[in-house]
Length: 126
Image (cartoon, rainbow, N blue to C red; front, side, top):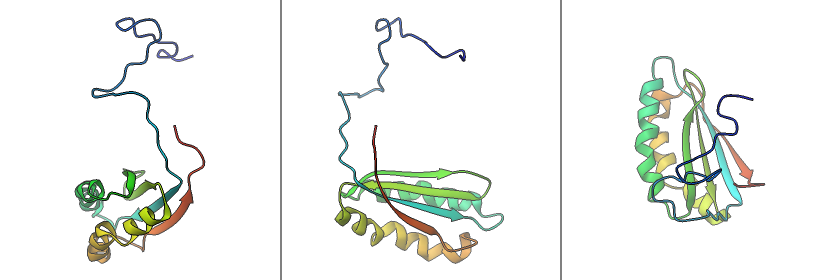
């Protein structure tokens, strides 16, 4: 076992989880639908794509039907976006929303190929 295995939070009591600031209790998520988009930046444009994705967060926050939205980097120029939705209407609203439009406006400059977008069915959530 690693050094962190079995670590206890003695400040709050033996084995108590340490919640994040603002924690209000158990998280209940009703998500059944998702999207997984894979993006490949043009050589030398990865930082620009990362900045675009960082800015897109505010657009995702404004979408009522988007439950969670993650933009991530898996390699030098490889990125992804993973979103979840409670229903198909939320997913379709996102697909027709401002983030795909913003990405489409700069895709030819920033991306080496078209994004690969997969619709996913959420099987389990923690």
